[in-house]
Length: 294
Length: 291
Image: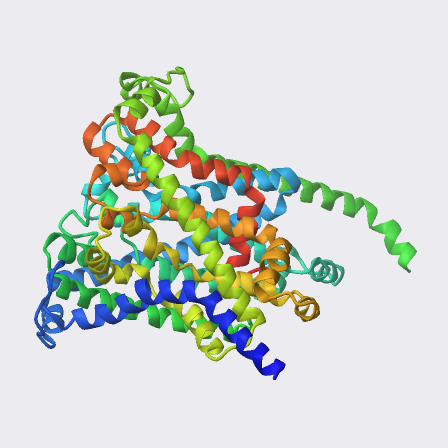
């Protein structure tokens, strides 16, 4: 009898403890997820009800050139950021890892610092750095390409430059993950391989690299997901321009919903982005599980 | 044999170790140079912010600070709504942090220690949260907030930011590591689960609580897209959104803009520099690389 009462009491207590999370989750995540699917089949404005229009939004999507431009730009941005930032972070982590004690902590802190800055602070600093007239980086550009460039108003420069700013901003996070990965490699492995006469090069490719692969896979996939969701830097630096050359999916969602009042169509675009990210996330989950992580 | 090699090797070993030392030295120098380049944008923003507007854009202004002029800071603190945005950012970020930690800890305790129908489903939901991109939900979330009359209010900024699944996962890992006997002993003594959580599990995990709280706070302070969408009146803006307005108002007054930027980053930069090890630890643990 007492056991049954205890069981019931434990159950009630458990439900009380999980209630706040479950309630908030249902309200701000679950319900909007269901809603975004429903809305994508309506012509709802941002505020107010719309009518069921079936697949119209999706048909429009397939004939919307801006949608494909955005999709292409998202892909281009992934190319410009994901692998470069992973390699750069790996390189920096390997260098930082050779430093000792306070020096290492200091250098690591400097590399990590940009990551904790708000995005608008980052874009303000880089707008100043890259200002066509007064930017401190412009003489450097002048040396390389022979003239000063309005980088965020130039269709060829805009994406690489947003990518540069993004890598500067977020790279510290990846460096930190690689450092953690490097610290997890037992030093005995290096000692043993050194005794066996392995060169530094061999040590890197036979010990460091294979053991670091799970972290590398983690960094790559996290970056893939993060950079697919890009909006802030693009909005703040170029607003998707010039000539839509930096227009990305989330920008399309924002413009359709909040500027053109097309809640339904924006939901359809958002759902595409949603599905893209879910697919990548599921792949990531599987990949990491295969990699032997819990 | 071993003696023979040992006596034959030294000269060679000395040469090798010297070249190794030079190599190490070169790499250290290279690392420091890379580090300096990485830090330069922040340094440059600071140097610009303590110059007068004319000096900042004059051709002869070098990279060495030649003026120490705090008038830009005074001007933006008194001439813009920066103090109000600070208040909004601090208020909303603190509430988000407290709520995320509290709800996360409670939920993780139930998941880790208690048995109840739906436990596996809940755990699945928490894991699924990782995969749901909040950015793709902004349209329907905005409509919801509008229905709840929370547009341009703190509640509107806060609510959608309360779901941070990683906090639950990390707490669950730490709670799982506490021996079950502890719980059984307290339950036998007549204590309940609330007492356990409050008196045992929470005090045992202050370290990770601090770490999670700091990264949650930094994340909340820095979030841009959602506050940008839900707030349209200047008085309700948070720092990251508000400072972009100064940009529009001042035009190309870069010295003032840089002081705004640095003021906006100051609280999180300080939080990071003070709690550096905790932040590093939290980032590593919450990404699952360590712990």
